Image (cartoon, rainbow, N blue to C red; front, side):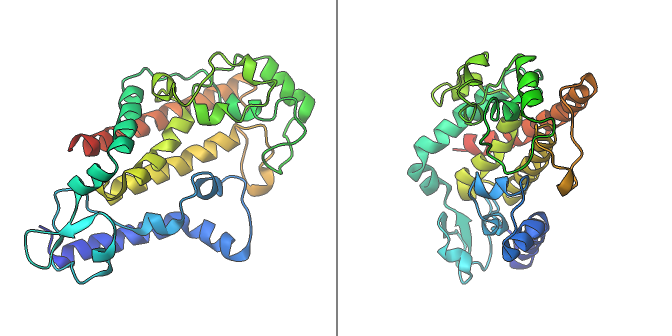
Length: 282
């Protein structure tokens, strides 16, 4: 049981952290400005900043004097044992979303138990523009089209993530070692993959109120940091937005990329373990 002053302080702290993480995006959105790096977390994943502001204590925590608050109308909550209190209705939530939770757990468990791979060097973004003049981002290529194509042709493409691979150009897809599909997601995903790390944010959102608020914000913060590396290592020239490139076409750039990739994999595995703890409570 958390007394009202205690859980309200936790709720306020969570909201303040969420606001700080999304402040720049919200300011740009109010002005109608787009950003080639940070908008991804709100457009591709399509979750609004308000979702991040909702603090959930997780299962097994009773919130005193909460029945008269807006939280009482949130999906996934039920009256607690003490009159006037609320708890996350874990059993009800799991009953409603059992198939989704099982699938998320299957992917997370398989990924967590697999050896991390660090040989992709972020070439998925390069493969998305290979031999194509129409690019996903309206940003110039740092090396130009011909030199960008040459980088792809000089490397072994090792993408294991379906949601990255599906954006490969038709000429790039056959060059990849694997043919990732949605059905093979649990069989291929590995903890060194940047996109698997970013997806932890998606899984935390989909698991809903059974995920404690700090885990959700940790997952979002990891996704934000990974996205920055993802685009710094991409073929795009992001200097006008203040991003220094990680030139993966060079040995020095590859080394820098892998150092960051290893650190993200470690952070991702910790969050993955916490999400699996949540899933396994049921």
